[in-house]
Image: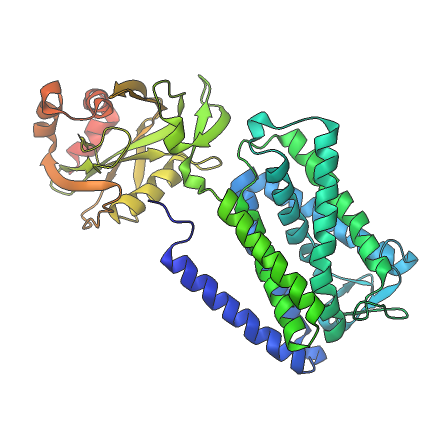
Length: 442
């Protein structure tokens, strides 16, 4: 069973919330000295890290950097326009508390402050309007609905953020405003900027066509941001933002519980040339007609020349209880085969720091057992270690070391019950010159 959050993640998340609440208390009750302005910039960066990570897992590193760059520049342009012309937020000015101001007007931190919110809102809208990218509606009405939803959500977010920011002195509006010093024009401006930001992401994803559904992890930064500013409102006695913030936090948590998926639980469908063409949940995807997807297979040796074998967990959907090679798994989207192999070695066997060589980069196979098919492009990697194993019982029922020559004999006999991919891989490895050179050096 896979939990939405591990015990470690819950502990870390709880600690972050305690730190945020403590920081909010002091910010609401202590005058911030100008020399502490660098702290706000650091906080903005820290708040942006979780959503940037989630965006990388969703779109890939290159596209995540490009999207964040576009949205960051857009935020700077809109904020600077408002300060010069009053459009779209109304006339206001920043204090020195957010750090260096570009051209003397807009703090550099604005580049990252708005983006986590608009990305989170778009992630929510994308999942509520369309659930799978492969079935994504390209109708203009669907795109318009997403844009409107994002704009409205950003206004709600700002009902929590802006009162606290004005109270602390991050910025001020000319003539103040009816909502804790914030004018209605500001919220109208957030409708406008939110719609522009949503349209940018809509166009970007239309062009890039991400193969993963928008992950619930996109809301992670916004959850912490809303909690922080709700806490500031609470310690400042601003009860309306507190109540709005509580509703938003409950909504974000409910969305996460409903739409969360683990990135390593999504297999990557590929064409004949190993080009990614789609994704699907791992368990649901393995059936009687499993489509071709990315995987890997590892053969791990010790300094005696013995091969580590594992018996697959009895609860696995594919080949439960069958003995096979050291470790197998699937490659995540935007992940290299080597990175996937090291990740899985650590997860299944508690082994890290192993250098792995890809010996059979083009190996592929199709096999069937009990009505379930495996159909994989499955590069074979070889590594060497004397580390002790710490098997994960969810994945591995048992392990043992066996001499290579003995294993070659044993696996050749189908009656011994080894996995079909291991039998094919051993035959190819045994005939491979590079593999034999590696083994001979032991």
